[in-house]
Length: 119
Image (cartoon, rainbow, N blue to C red; front, side):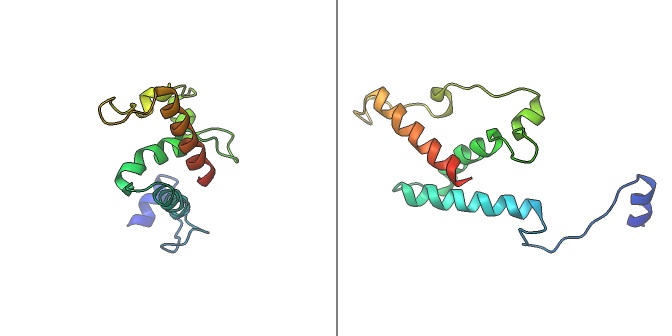
């Protein structure tokens, strides 16, 4: 029945082995995601994967794909994302840290470059 529905809708059904990054694009993305998470966790102490995930996904969604020439964000919203660094991650409150804002921004920018190199 599923084949008949596919034929009616002109859908080509393909089968890929599970957990095979070579043939399954979703698994390939998961492989890159895992590498980026491991890199971020190893690079910084006391960082859990749940805290690192939003920044890594942001980088993945805004990085230009070599084959298409577009980022997933550009394809989805038809525009390039320009976002101030402060919006991505708010600087720590002065009570929690005595790091000057400029130093904080330099550190954060360094982290983003490191994450982008891993993806």
